[in-house]
Amino acid sequence: MTSFLKLALRNGMRHKLRTGLTVLGLVVAILSFGLLQSIVDAWYAGADRAAANRLVTRNAISLVFPMPINYREKIRAVEGVRSVAVANWFGGVYRDTSMANFFPRFAVDAEQYFAMYPEYVLNEDEFRAFLRDRKGAVIGRKLALQHGFRIGDTIPIQGDIFPGNWEFTVRAIYDGAEPNTDTSLMFFHFDYLNETLKQRVPGRADKVGVFVVAIEDVGRAAEIARAIDEQFKNSAAETLTETEKAFQIGFAKQTEAIVIAVRFVSYVVIAIILAVMANTMAMTARERMTEYATLKALGFPPAFIAALILGESLAIAVIGAAIGIGLTFPVGYWFAAKMGTLFPVFGISPQTVGLQAVCALVVGIAAALLPMRRAARVNIVEGLRFVG
Image (cartoon, rainbow, N blue to C red; front, side, top):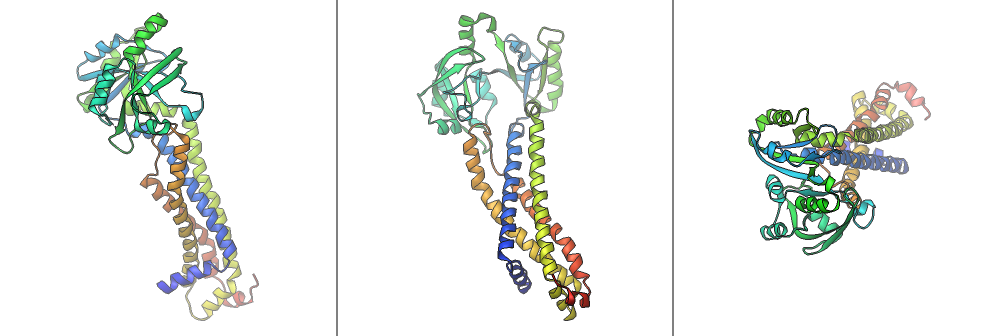
């Protein structure tokens, strides 16, 4: 077996330039495939980390339309609801509109909200300081590292959805309980936003973007969601309540066409390199037809010749895949750093690595099929006369 593998590798290196270019193509294809698949995974990361015991209530028409804040107490009164918290998307601009300075900002009911999210790990002293400060903010560790924010720093935000100049003081930095926890977010007090709006734009005060609802029994999620929505049926602001995962998936589906395109391109890349690899193996087999005929004349069975071609093809595929997969991790980390908070949770999953390996093996096998068939069926006399 060892001798056979050595022979396959030596055959592969007989045309170093051709083999090198084929391996390079495989490396680029496997690397691109891994990155594109990781982008798709990152797109749906919010849905993957959603908790089953959290529901989200929003305006039934669209997220753009708010709901009255007095819905909070009515939702809390529904049987099976443990607690309710407000969450308002704030928007705004930090420094400039570049993606490097973009990060999500939410106004929340601090105590109720963070009690629902045990994945956000906070220092108790810092959290108490945040609760005492009307203009205090909680930020994620990734966000703090990216912008160099420290406890006590002031974050100035130019409002767009909520006009005006806003300033927030970093009072706490949270870490993630799990590796896939989003630590690129900023939270501040909903009361501060609401009180300021009462002074500046009274007509926009006491309005809420979404209510996050913690429930006691996960098995009753659909029943509780229907009960919440039934309360506001035929009102000026009807509601749609769904699980947090469904809410996140619905949000991601707004750009689903982009995700489908990215996934499609990742497989197109593999198809292209399959064509390149198949051409390489076809050229190799055609050039060695006389050698294969000689091996048959010496008594080697067709299966041995076919296995020799398959071994060479797989050796090239494995080398290219190993390098491509190895490069996926540093390139992926570099890509994530450049994207900042656009992909708050970006990583190379074991499933992606597995797909890369499977694709490489499929390419190696598929590229060798026709050359194997042709070489195994070559007539000895015709093969010895063949001029490649």
